[in-house]
Length: 165
Image (cartoon, rainbow, N blue to C red; front, side, top):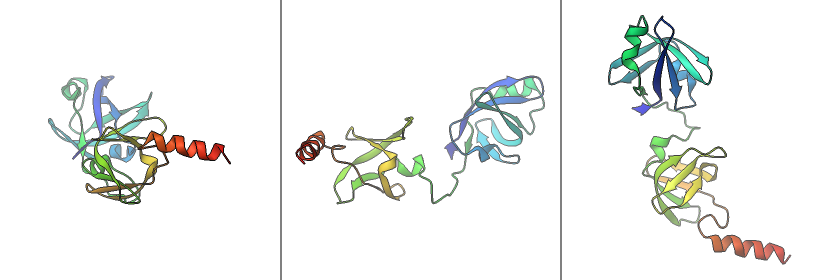
């Protein structure tokens, strides 16, 4: 299961709790959705956006006192199968390969970055996700990298060649 957020503080008296999602899939908080944490199964009874977070009411947590037991927990959910999305759990451990077959390392983390998430490789390289052209989950990530991404000298050569034109 994947961690999809973090439970914060209770809000008011009727059992709502703040939730900071760590996913862009807000359907995780649709009414009836089931999340799991070490406190057990959490069924979403109601949810609404509030100041960059969500206020969520779970079945079986009728008031502030009850929901206080959830503070700091990390709800998890089953992966959503969407062939048009890249999922962190499918990238970690995969080998990054250029279109010509050159292996560049294994993905050890996916780093949040405002312009584009970055694949962190065990070789130290950082590869923007926008360069991913194909994926075999947990095995192989094919990238189309611009000159210089893996070898700064390539970028300098390309720059020098275009300056001579």
